[in-house]
Length: 454
Image (cartoon, rainbow, N blue to C red; front, top):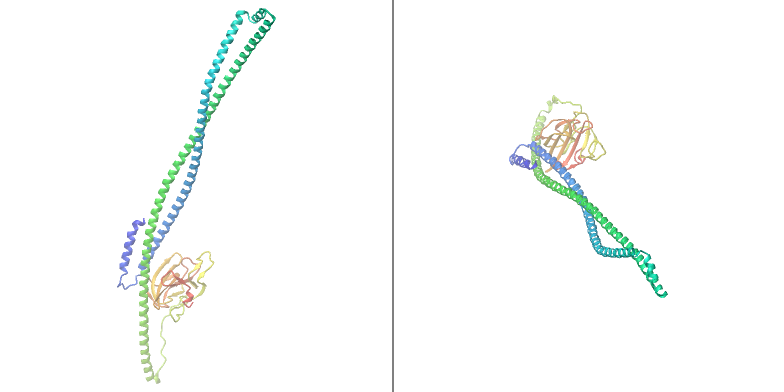
């Protein structure tokens, strides 16, 4: 974990800081390499942490959206449950009303039943009386017992009235019995229907309550998961913050070391110029002495024999060293310039100039300086980085895709001095030199053609 590695990195940084203190005479470019490797590891860790943070954030967002949907379903269920509850309450009220109607009807039924019972008694009495008197013959006796025609008419009217009353009683008895049966059936049917509807509503409400309970459980699970994810995200963000702090700390150390190398390069350049001035002074004195000797021996002077120096030959010659601050780093043709380019296999933003030639072509330092890095890179292949001091200002040159490196970190090199050979290492389509110029320390590329005679 980064929390555990922070003290270790801090210790490394502190150790390096002590090793870079005042009084150090060597360039120690490997220290810069170590710092940059440490920074690269931390940057990789930061990228991993950032990906983890983004993944947690996406998961949290997805969980939040899922929870919102569940909460919307719960709100919908709340509405449905409330509707069912209202329907149940309304039905319960109707049941109570129906029961009250039944109670009232029961009182009416009792009265009706009493009426029917009374009529039944009356009818039974009438039947018994008819049986005792001989049935319908008694009506004839009543009519024949009249003393006058007027009384006969009265008795006929009375008999008809009694017969009509009997028929009416029987009709009412039938109607009341039918009404009683119908009312009983209606009330009982209505009550049964209401009770059945109540059971259905209660079952529907129970199902809604079960669904709500299930959804509540899912929401609680999502909320717990959300809390866990947010806690993990906060932990990752804390680690990222710590890694960022350590990265900034290492960057400061790297800048400080690059500046220290630049100071050494500046002093080396000043020393070189001093030595060149001294050499020119001595050469001038020697030339004056030789001229005097030449004048004295003018009559007998002869052309000196040429020195037998051995010159190494390669498949391609080293470039001629030009005057001024900079010289061309390799012989060959320019195949790609600085800036945007349309290549599927290489960077679309070319930060340097490519010079193509045969493998093994000598590569020389474009200017006087200190080798700040020399090693291998997945893209640049074998490469060299040189820190220069030009009129008190720092500049950096980079030489990539080398087949061989002929110098080392911390070495002091001169303009035109061979430092390696051309190759096709790293990400390359053929033998060539990838050459970069940076203002200040590495990371600020400019067009090399604006500074170096290419």
